[in-house]
Amino acid sequence: MLVVSDDPLARTGLALLLADRDGLAVSGQAGVDDDWPEPDAPGAPHVVVWDLGLGPQSGIPFLREAADPAGPSILAVVADEEDAQEALAAGARGVLPRTADGERLAAAVRAVAQGLVILDESFATLLLRDAPAPPEELAEPLTPRELEVLQLLSQGLPNKRIAQRLAISEHTVKFHVNAILGKLSVQSRSEAIVHAVRMGLVVL
Image (cartoon, rainbow, N blue to C red; front, top):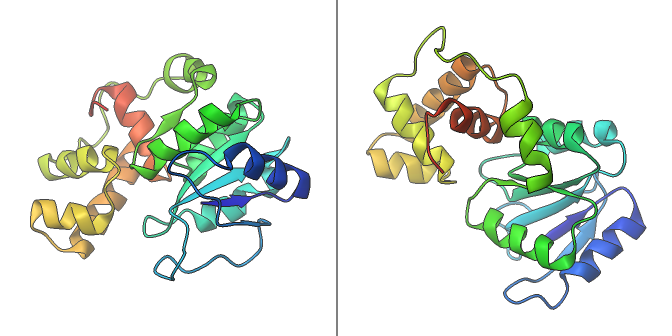
């Protein structure tokens, strides 16, 4: 995994918390605007643990740009619920508070690596319960095929695997994903999954 932060002390601290955990290896550390290995390059990380600091605004544009379905999954470490919401909207696959210990961090990294969406319990109230609920019925309902794609998205599958499961092209999957994001009025796959769970469209 790659540890990312603009704060060298935060990077070092996260790397130490995750060192020597079963099945995990820290492959490197980077600042938010440093170059990362290409997804198919030898030694490319499967997960990025990204500390957004006490104010995520400066890092969010970089996170949004880095959040690529073909790239590593991003676990964001944030200060509070608002920052967690920003990170999910930008494409993070999971959010943890900066107070999380090494055991919780390691568990979240393993889960994100398996394609799961991770919400720390301290953020769940705002993100899944108290936040304004989306309308019970969408202005334009999802088609049966879009619901199939959405369910596979919630399982953490990339476009290529979804295409294989449904026997359609990756281009068609991308078209369906874009349609889903538009109908749910969200900007990222992670945010779409959160909204879909709250609306009862998928079950994690």
